Length: 214
Image 1: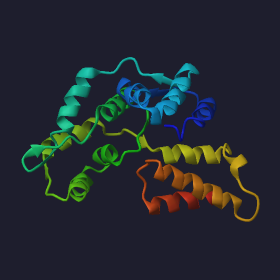
Image 2 (image 1 turned 90 degrees about the vertical axis):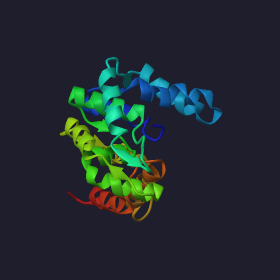
Image 3 (image 1 turned 60 degrees about the horizontal axis):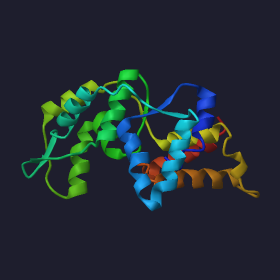
Image 4 (image 1 turned 30 degrees about the horizontal axis):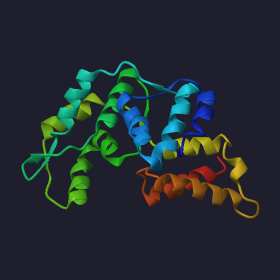
């Protein structure tokens, strides 16, 4: 969140609408970080965005749906006969509320995006991550993915790219040859290394697009 906090007011001004976070996300971004010296200032940054009206905490989370779909998701894959908890409360709240509102949702974590968009790749991801055989429950996978059909998930790297196209980052362009190239590379790699699940190839593709003349 800290890597996006300063561009969100500009994006809100340009496009209108509301940037929502859910109560579970608020807990992860504010309540828990306030108890840790390392992350307190990041929590204060998010609190300021809420005070300034840039962010809002979504007030009408359908908790029954959250519980139901969390149970489905976290029983969709098993390892050694035990169900795997693969989606956290903040993630499931976010995608459910976005679906309810007919809105897009910003999620950087790979697991929930892959589950919703390309569930066939989830087994490979989990097997690679845990280095053990993973068994899918196709009925539960189908039930979960069908619920979120049509949901648009974007990543922070897309928001940063929009900010670049809006020229919000032009003051960072260094003097000299290839200044824009240096800026684009720096912002895309910084976003990746700050937690956005994006491959090296995707970074290169996005860089080429942002630097194209179209």
